[in-house]
Image (tube, rainbow, N blue to C red; front, side, top):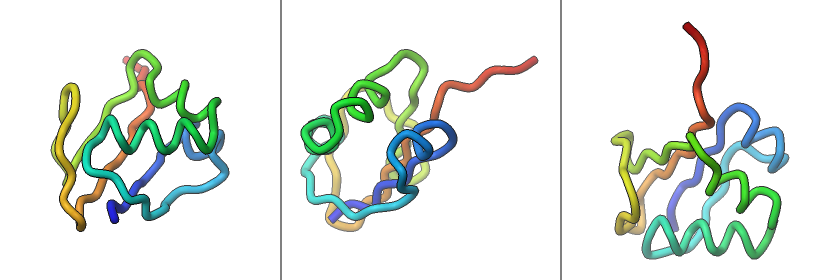
Length: 79
């Protein structure tokens, strides 16, 4: 099971910071989350949300190992 971490407003929306979820890829993980919580699923697919797998930012889909850590990072702003 992948260790899933949410930060900032994503964590607030979900009501949790960390969970373990069974999924073979980032897209499958997002689908599982979206089925459980449509608003969170939409937010994860939103513009500017970044995904890190094992502390490396990934673009698009990525395969997950059983012990993968997947972090969803909200859009950043500032100057």
